Length: 333
Image 1: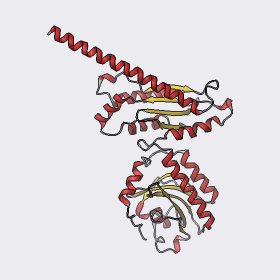
Image 2: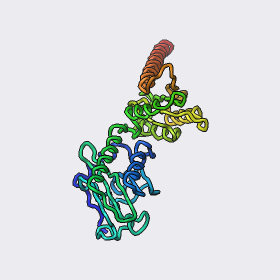
Image 3: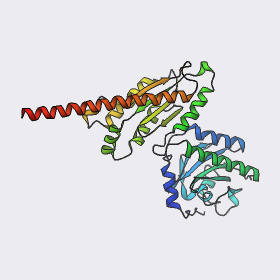
Image 4: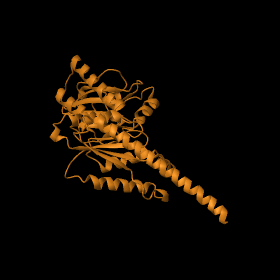
């Protein structure tokens, strides 16, 4: 078996991959639709979005495979990122590089492989969109172009729809998911936008106590408490939203309450935040007010602005009270 070599720009490539904060994040329909589409278009039992980390290939999306990851040194995708075009192995059992590879000899019994590199805007190859079959196959030139085009679309999703600090969706992704909601019939538009605001003082407290980006910690909490959300997004350093379809089986209020409780526990060491609530507001779809998701996001921005103004007034009042107490103590003592 021939293990894949490392690219000349390996350190920079890994840095680019990890800067996207997409590794080890939950499955997302934004990416799953490309693996489903690829499996159907090319009539393949297995289609993967594979990201090549330092010592593993991790699957952001997969059709026809149970494994979450496999070692990099046995990966076909590790070879694919070394070139520019589609890397194809028509029959691994007759290819000396792969015929004794454990992925060939054991599950998933890779016989045919074709992978198109996922090339970031800076030229670094992050992984592949790949196709696998258990029998020998061959792609036509036209099919290779189609696979490469799909890979470019996957990269676009990663770069333009993912918040690089948290790995959550960004505003573009919420607009896209929301637009699909508004394509439904009016009577089927049963959804809401939940708004969460950490505030700058809470962010500073978490950074001081936990020594890691608060947005990443809060992102994990959001994913945990809203696993079936249409979109969970970061709208800025402090502001987050959850686009949620109404479901009688899911207690939205309870999930929100648990989330706020866990957020307070992150900053439990500071008594100032015992009553802090991360929830900034809830915007249910209203046909009389909302013609598009843009209207709902504009309303969200206004709520965030009002909350920030309110908290600023409270902070100024506390500071004013504190100064008065200092003067009073000097007078007494």
